[in-house]
Image (cartoon, rainbow, N blue to C red; front, top):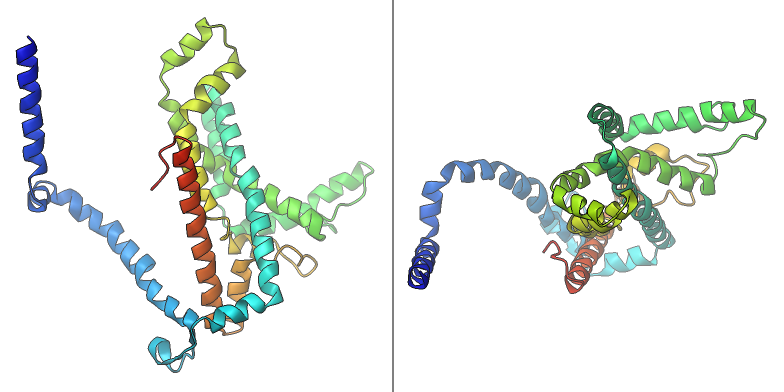
Length: 321
């Protein structure tokens, strides 16, 4: 029996070696339909993601539209020095880090909490109805969300403030004062994203072996103990992967979201890097500065992703790279 087992293992190893020795032409002939389908997303990435990177050269030039990319004068890091010396740059970096850090704390954790709660619901119909309602805000544009927010939270005639006044309270400037605007900005972002963010977590939870829950029940675990000892460890890889990807967006942010919710009365926290790129590039026509600050933003995001991935691997997780 041992001899037969050893011989079968040798045959399996030889087959694998033979398969590995086949060239790329063999796999192209065998799976050409799949490779043909792959060309569509690959072409999209090459055309719309990598091809525009050639325009980053204007961050190192005194770019003039009439001269073009290659005809403009090369100035090296002079544009970056000008950008870093601007008072608005430090303010934009601070606001971007603040807004995105708050989003990371609340908008990242709330989908996990919501997915855990939905996973405990036993009524399939109730769960589906709630999931549909929670997914809906994700499909609304920030222009629509901003209009709804001002209809509900405006200090003068907002629905929420009208109700507060009817109950004897004072009107709250949710979107008219900087501190209140910051809280409203984060809360609206959580409402818009938490439903859609539960999809991956619920998918990961659906793959948990039911026998693990049965063993926990036998050991006397209650509902909260099962969540803590079974559910959360089982979706740890998903949480870590999404956390690493979200860390790469800490220096990015949403221009549409800030633009839809900002106003002239709230300027302390609404000046972000994305807003500066818009002001300097499209409004001011200084494309070199806008490109330089965008490149700085991308480099910082890449460094954060690589650092988070390395930390995750040192803690025993797979990471994303």
